[in-house]
Image (cartoon, rainbow, N blue to C red; front, side, top):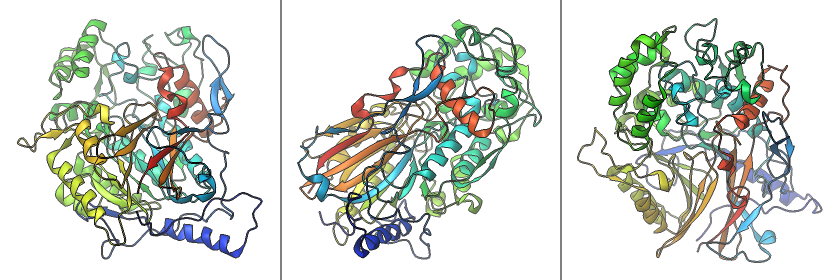
Amino acid sequence: MQRIRSVATATTAAHAVDRRALLAAAGAVTLSAGVGYALGPGAGSGNAAPAGRATVPRSRPAPAAPLAPYKNGTTLLTVAAPHGTTGYRRLGDGPAWPRVVRGDLAAAKPGREGRRTALAAFVQFTDLHLVDVQNPLRYEYLRAQTASAWRPHESLSVAGAVALVERVNALRGAPATGAPLHCVVTTGDNTDNNSRAELDWFLKVMSGGRVTPNTGDPRRYEGVQSSGLKLYWHPDDPVRDADKRLGFPHLHGFLDAAIREVNSPGLALPWYSTVGNHDALPGGCWAPRDPYLTEFATGGKKLMSLDETRGAALWKAVKKGHDPKGDRFKELLRSEKRRMRSVTPDASRAPFTPTEYLQAHLDPAHTGPGPVGHGYTQENLAAATQHYTFRISDDVLGISLDSTDPGGHYEGSLGTAQLRWLERELKANERRDGGPSYVVVFSHHTSRSMRNLRHDPARPGEARHGGDEIVSLLARYRSVLAWVNGHSHKNAITPHRTPHGAFWEVSTASHIDFPQLARVVELTDNHDGTISLFTTLIESAAPHRTDFADLSQTGLAALYRELSFNAPGAKPALGGDAGDRNTELILRKG
């Protein structure tokens, strides 16, 4: 497969810095600066930016030549790890996660380190779950049924996400090659309650701005952590709640700090957005545009406790996909009206529509380092679609999918129209002048979680298509290197081999549940008939060690990580095995 342009090979520090190396580094920046545009839902293979659409200006200087691998700021150097063996455990610096070479799909050939050239590098954010913890639609009372219903640390999600932005801004390039990073791509569940307030917070975190993570009464917190109910951790109150019995600390002033203004510098790289089920569905699982749920979310009543038997029945129906429209949920809320507590109403808690989601991304106030719309275009707005193609680099095409099902339920699928569009884009790329680009596909759902084939109410005659069918389609195109996604909140890297071809599926853990990671992905040509995909996990810039007296923005971000590790019900396996973390994935491509 003919390549158009690639970054100069990584070299060791012992090599002289000559004019040629400097020009290679400068050329890499030019590449990064010239690819920040989206190609839209009907733009074909995207040989050039659409007419009249400017490319994104340079976002950072090139790293000093010669380019070289590095570990600082990544889990290749150190990873947050607990001290002690029981009770509430404090975090500190832990042993690094080494890089593992995986040859499931092709053998790793000797000498490739000296031959390889960089094709592209990007950062994946996924499942940030920026959450309005006071939203009446939050179902914290289901805590006994699912750890995702309420987390002791989730009031700090904005501070934690800003610290992740700070980490990316501090990286001096791609860890395996030292080449410039081209962009950041989110893979959905950017928000938690599908609320307008959370969407505004997300866009300001990513592009820069000041966020006050509070809704309702601007003077005080009104959620479950000041309710007096022992089901929840009350950091400001000496009440002996269930979490304090497990060793959770008493932190005077915590809730006031949690709703205090947070300042995000915004990413220094272009960034692109992909939609997840929590971005599209109230609660992440119920069909949108329900007048009752909108009225309840913006109203003045909130349910904070529930009989465990009733809660178990509701969650069982949700898990099995038996309540996609939320009928059982609404019935429960109506029946519990007398037991609800008063909160301050707030219109900003209303669920946002797909149109509002697109308009918010296209708002110039949220452009940051670009591109305008962060992948979404006016074409998406006109066609009511949320899928698009974009250039990661001259050599690599990105395809962002909308895997949510508007019919409801937290699992996903693709409609026939989008599946056919994906097939057309892959075919058009094969016919690209100068040879096809390599392709990386992005979605929220994993192949295993795309089993929801419920019809879209707006397209009742259109079939839905699951993960197995999508794997089969992607494998038919030798240009496809990887499918990058999230949703599972767990690191997992899966090789896909079919009679027609092969590619890697890279699923990354969330930034709401420990170990709170993002992933750098690098693509290199080994010039021996193989491609290497490097994956390197990164944590936020917050220190591993916490100080209970430090309630600054940085101190809260550190607490966000430590509290998430100690959260009752937290799953220790979300970090994955060594082969799901820092890797070199070998793939045979011609």
